[in-house]
Length: 163
Image 1 (cartoon, rainbow, N blue to C red):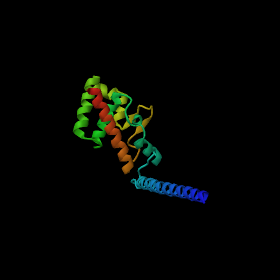
Image 2: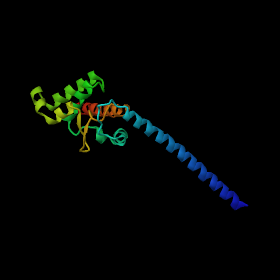
Image 3: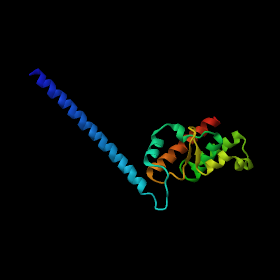
Image 4: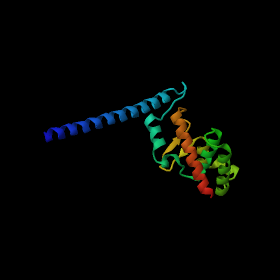
């Protein structure tokens, strides 16, 4: 009799674990499907080289992928972020100008600095050694979240540099 109760209890625990796992998997799958749907709604002529998984990993992964490897590039990214209205234009411009002053980059030198010019074009030379083109990741809500996160992280990076 005791063994029968133990077996029933074990079966009940196993069943409840399977049910809760399948509910979690279903909600996770719904989230992925929703994000994939968002990506597919991008404007028709827009080409996106980033997959859903790479955007998700950028958003949820380490900040190394979304912070700049140099302050010159960070200053350029801040200019890009201000122009794209991905961060507070006033704060971003102020920090960018202070970073450029601290670096000693005058206007003519800025145009010759490849890291700075990359940043202005939306090319984030990340700390992990990769280069992320913020222009080509698309305009889905997930892509905008990645761009906004990158702008926020680079803004904090610039503020830490000037303080």
